[in-house]
Image (cartoon, rainbow, N blue to C red):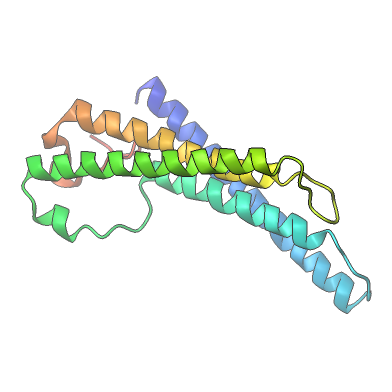
Amino acid sequence: MSIVDKIEAALARTMEIAAMAMMAALIGVIGYSVLARQVLRISVAWSEEVGSGLLMWMALLGAAAVWARRGHIVIDVLPRRLPPRPRWLLAIAVEIAALVLFAIIVWGGASMMQVSANNHTTALRISLSWLYLALVVGVGAMALFSVLHLGRLIARGPQCLEDGWTTSSSSSD
């Protein structure tokens, strides 16, 4: 395993752990909010804002970690029926298309960060830019992982798709 593969795996694992911690925090915030409202009869104005932020960060960091492992659901009926070289070319085209999509999303997220810099949440007065930063970080990480996968695809050539090889850094080849 190369140093780049180790860094990629460590980054993906860090994002995965952060997403799990955010899930636990989200459960705690929602649980506290329900307890406060139903049992203590008090309103917790900040719980919706914190819960929304945690959900957004958790989903995007988790999606990036899964993208690194190539764990998202895939419909691969066509690639499975293609010979190695066309399958390889299709894999490269799909990776490039994903990179274009990620670039558009990151650009849009960064634009929204700028536009929302002076807009704040109601209860905690947190800049909405922090919420859009989750989009930039999560999808930016997905783009980074895609660049690494694309590099592996190109470096290893069409034969890399034989015998069930994936572009995941955790694959054994």
